[in-house]
Amino acid sequence: MRVVMKFGGTSVGSADAIRRVAEIVAESRREHEVVVVVSAMNAPDLRTTDTLIAAARAAAQGDGDATALVVPRLLDLHMRAAAALTSAEECARLEPELRAMLDYMSDLSRSIAVLGELTPRALDLFSGLGERLNARLIAATLRSAGLPAEAVDASALIITDERYGSAAPLLEETRTHSRERLLPMLTQGIVPVVTGFIGATRAGVPTTLGRGGSDYSCAILGAVLDADEVWFWKEVDGVLTANPKLVPEARTLPRLSYSEMAELAYYGANVLHPKTVLPLVQRHIPIRIRNTFNPGHPGTLISDEPGSGTAKAVTAIKDVCLITVGGPGMLGITGVAARIFSAVARAGANILLISQASSEQSVCLAVPRAEAAGAVAELRKELASEFSAHDVEHIEVQDPVVIVALVGSGMRGTPGIAGRLFGAMGEAGVNVIAIAQGSTENNISLVVADADADRAVRVIHGSFAL
Ligand code: ASP
Ligand code: MG
Image (cartoon, rainbow, N blue to C red; front, side, top):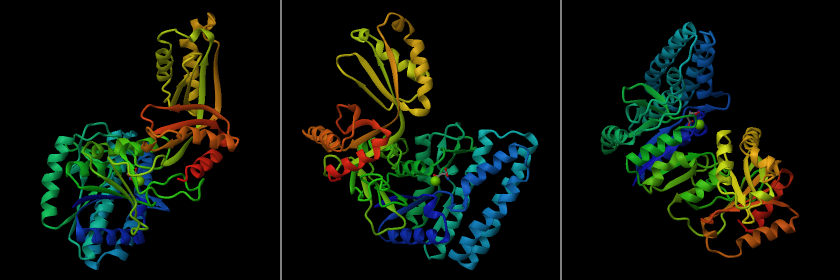
């Protein structure tokens, strides 16, 4: 099977971690064709990407030596790992290569200091350097362990638009370039070690896919290479039934459907971002989340198939504000909902949940707390004439509140889930402020007071024996 696998920054954050990565790659390569995608080294005391971005910003403020100061630290971080992981020969070859790349940045940052300006285009050149350093280190590590491997800069593979800082891939061109470059390597038994996060425009100007973009790189490559599976190696065993900090007995879900994953991500669970993995979802390529630090664990398999179980996981989004627009005259005013939502959109607030009873006396919507004041101001403006006619009497704000969501596609068509959910809330003495369930039935959301949220999550987890 062809597997594209990505290792995140912490999974490649130290010599020890990289040693595990090399073992995992070697082991996987015994059975599969493997393409590796790597993030920049995220060491506890030196976060490569953050450090590079900070140096570039300092240069723009006139500090032309900022990069020169971080160059030795970054070189040391990578070369200390290399000394522990690679043969003397590889190490000797790597040092001048990495040094030249870092020195180039240092020169560039002096020019930025002179110009006093850092364009998004120049910033992408800086921020993507960590991946380029690390791909070389990891390829050298694999070769030193006897595995043919080669570092590949994704700027030769992933062709993007020109939105520097959050570029989007042009999939057809990316497909052509990636296959031309990587498939012959696979045929020859070479493991490509590809930089995450970066790409380049058609004209060859370097871009980045946005912070945390290595997941996206991996999904893009998995899709264009027609991978059989794509594995994301992280620092957790997979997707959990709840936040383990709140629910110590939370466990790893063996299977999840794409849409369940999307619901969980939307409601604040720490899983892959749905937009990130869209190229895989569109091609129905199964995804696995696995733990670099516990490779024996099978992790979570995410695919079209939801697997067994009705309700699967419970999540919470905190720092939410509930806005209720109500009044006796709202009944039957057509277009009032549209106007409410447009007003909120004009304020740039993101609506997390909507609820309206059929009595039409009120509409309530939840938005992130930071976006609430703007939304309320726009609503007052929009509904000014209804206010003076007393058709709308109040715009009430409740905060902070928390949205607690129970997710699982097996809830669809299964009676009694809501009953059990609200029964549990009643027994636990948790007051439910608002409720929403879409007709896809793969999510029931409750709004509760901030003080009740942790208890609600625990009680739900317990009563559904998640
Ligand atoms: N190194 C990049 C970042 O820190 C990309 C990634 O880690 O996914 O944002
Ligand atoms: Mg990262």
